[in-house]
Picture 1 (spheres, rainbow, N blue to C red):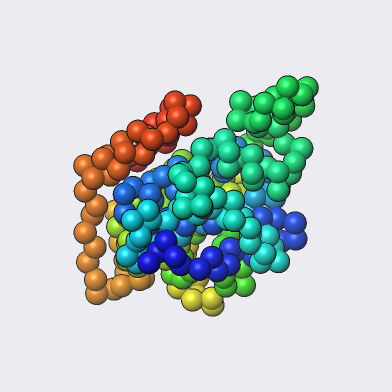
Picture 2: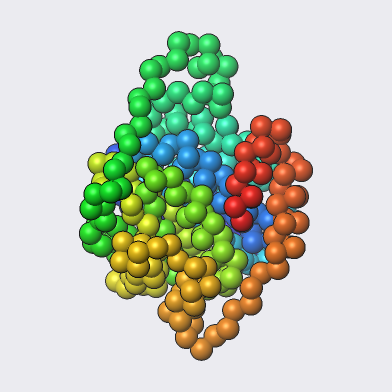
Length: 286
């Protein structure tokens, strides 16, 4: 029963002082879409916070309990895991602002979350907001492949096969990365065991957009590198490359768009007005 699966540590081990988020969800009832929406909310809010190194989504496909599973955990670089939210324990899905506050309190308590912060924090004097550095993409902006690839040593605790998408935060490519991620997990719903979104932030050079697949701790393959290909991938071609890698003899049925739209509408129905407005923006790119 997926609602009773142990909370084993599955986070990516990152450099000292950094954290990684795991979002576990049942593959039924649109919880994958909810998971991706929450992931992009957190990655957007903490886009300039280097201590949040990555977010991994972990689908649970075994027979779910009536209430299903939806868990959010934070993992430090030593592998210690803390449960932030469990739908069964908390009696429902988390609001985005509540998760943002929980994550903020761990990775950097000094961050001000604006309208998503607590009443106490909002009453305090707002700290000066740093101006985001503008990245000049007219220069040579490509990262070396070895800088962008999730290293085998880092991926050892992530459920495999894993697909990782590294994206440039300065280029605002998070939604694009989340779109590709949702497309891949919908098509390869049995083959992919986790998918990781990895922000590439300054001082790294801008322009990074790389999709890779890890089948074993020592086997990571590049599916697409924008610096090499010169453009973003077509979803069909990206799926063909991943399919050839995961299951050369297999065929994969495309998910029904109508079903995806229905799942999105169900998710929106039980959100508060503020979260629903933000979610509509996200679902609009799916």
